[in-house]
Length: 148
Image (cartoon, rainbow, N blue to C red; front, side, top):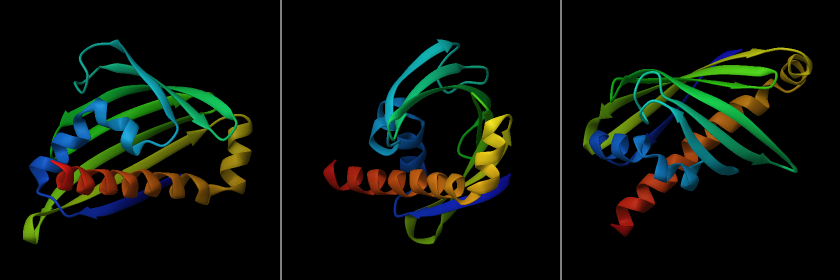
């Protein structure tokens, strides 16, 4: 399953990228994030591996993130691996008129086992979650600007 998601943020690209790349901010826009733990490398650099723990509904899940490309603001690509699903998210930032920024993500999912059934029955739930994270990041970034 492959799809794009995007959001326009009412902030300059340098501010958006700075907020995006700081792991201390993830808890403000990644609903359900319980913890993250750097396992290998340097945060945000190619090859870095970070273990994420999420609570989604009544269950907890873990996923390992690996940074594949780190060329901000042009491209930041990460792969995530969890039981039954692996996905790649390529984030790109574009400068818009009026000091605004367009954040676009290209999302590529691969499923195995029971997750293939879930993906077949509910493909919209993955797209909805990706868009929710983008909208939550936008809200966080724009409110952060107001509070600073």
